[in-house]
Image (tube, rainbow, N blue to C red; front, top):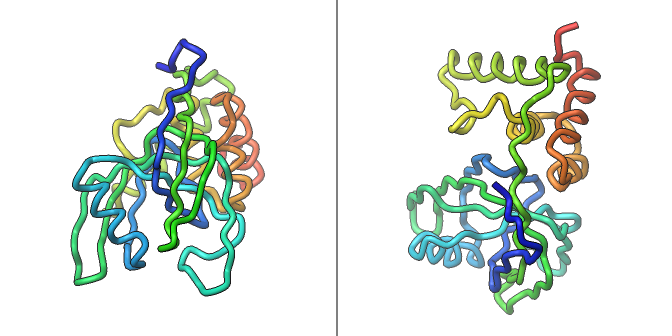
Length: 211
């Protein structure tokens, strides 16, 4: 349930991981880490059990290049490390779980290239039951999940909430072949039902929903 008081929870000194993709709450994020600026950060987060922030790159590249500036959105998602494997020296494989969203208050770049930010946590979506007219969006997601598992592929993250507007909208938004800018806009929406309605419009245009 979301907080009822008006004061947001602040988190200072959050390390940021800018990506060209958008991370939605309750999602799963696999990463391979090889950049020096992230290797130590990821190890420390794993050892201490603290999250880092995933934020969408607006300009720049995921892999640092000399002379390339980075700019990113102000709203991102906290990620906690569920597992970490050292593949070889200088190469880590991690599996992260997405938590709640945050908004950057201020950020600065260290001399080693790592971005650090003070952020305010954004309340989690309220649980909103899916209305009858949007049930096809949920039932189609159930079908996709069953097809993935039948092929021996990872299904949707658990626990599953096929009756919840926000959860269903987020899982579809992760998979949709749309621009990251639109995914960012969907992720930032405060209303989970509006997010699901917009996802339904996209699915309808793609011919995914039953006629």
